[in-house]
Length: 187
Image 1 (tube, rainbow, N blue to C red):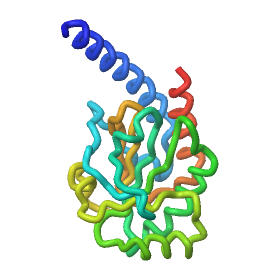
Image 2 (image 1 turned 120 degrees about the horizontal axis):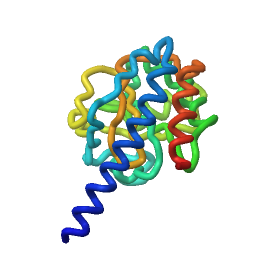
Image 3 (image 1 turned 90 degrees about the vertical axis):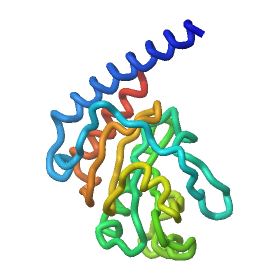
Image 4 (image 1 turned 90 degrees about the horizontal axis):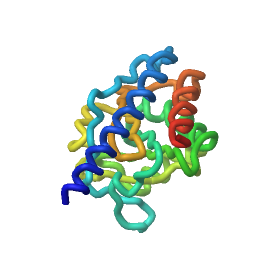
């Protein structure tokens, strides 16, 4: 039992050092909308509430995505800034999505499955998930107070940064931030 506790503390300590290195690398290159990206000290655990995977695929939690960096975007079909931002998030997933990084879009609140599908269809987006948090359980547990809200979650399942409002995810600064995160995965 003592060995497990020591290993857990060692793991947390190494994880904290890795996150600190990542944060300092990112803070120095933020510009434009990415200056709204606020880093959390200390990183916060993410919600373990269930959300729908859509398309009859069942439910999941954010914990099911551990092992890779996650750009988690809370949005809604009625949200004008979300409509502006979603094509850029789609491009980020096309460019960087894979083994070490994923964009997760989570429609929160009163968004029907058909409304979500129509939203993506009208925007020409076919590569982002139709995940849904209908009772806003995940959003509530993660203190999401407005849409869109985007978070960076590390591979250990901790929120390290949050951006409230829409952002230019096609900017060089946003892309460089993601590249730094993915590079950290290789260490």
